[in-house]
Amino acid sequence: MIPAPTPSNEAERLAALYALLLLDTPAEERFDKIVAFAAEEFEVPIALISLLDTERQWFKAAIGLGETCETGRDISFCGHAIMHAEIMVVEDALHDPRFADNPLVTGPPNIRFYAGAPLILSNGYALGTLCIIDTRPRQLDPIALAILSTLRSLVVQELEASHA
Amino acid sequence: MPELKQMLLVEPENILRRTAALTARSMGLAEVQEASSTAVARQILAQRPFHGALISVDAGDAFDLTLLDLVRQGHSASRPRIPLAVLASRCDDTLLAALRERGINRIVLKPFRARALLDAFAALSGS
Image (cartoon, rainbow over all chains, first blue to last red; front, side, top):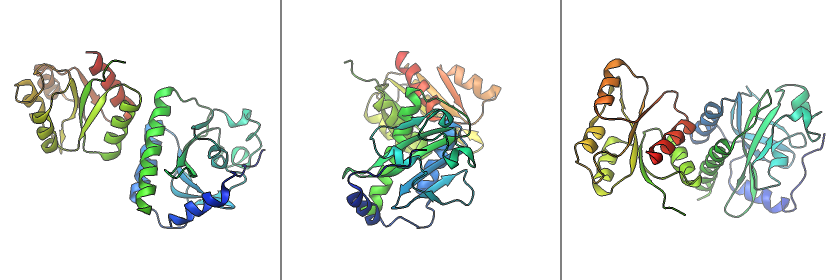
């Protein structure tokens, strides 16, 4: 497993995240609706809005993870996804050296497919992802990527509205 | 690059409507104007012409076909024969007959997916 890397602008990124005052806050319908929509649209068992804190990823909204509200950042897929602006797609985690022996792959929730759209605010900081996850390998075509990108934009709008 | 076709989407569910409209634009399928209700759509249809429209006809347990009639009877700024598609939670023989009578090109049934709406826009744009 390759642990999630740390962005070069980590201190500023974290400051931008903390300024939103969203970490460890209660669930909000405006975010819950987006992940519910994503789960239905893509027919996946898991959909998340994940925010990357210093040592953890914390889920502002989650479908399919039960009571789990955070995991370690080192094992997070989203920690990899925020390193680039494009959507990160892992079609089969078992065949990806970054994730093949990741405990989230070898054990519950048994991730095989992951697609994470970085949540990049207008100030340029990637705070987390909107991601969809499946327990079987999958592919995303250009239409699906475009839909996920649009949903990501809706999440970013809501995040920035929190800060306004 | 050819100008995008102007489409109207009438759909009350916010995330579905916004996702379909924004994605259609980002993919260069169509320029989609959004209306969240029949009342809003009436105003928009009176103000500007469209090349096509995708209209939710669900109204509780019944169906509301007034926007379809408004367009087909020439009471909008659009040509009366523009391609129209509908979103409906279900479709029985009565609704199907009513839609055929109004020359509806396509029906999108529940569960509504953004992808299905994009397919409909692509079909309407090609009509």
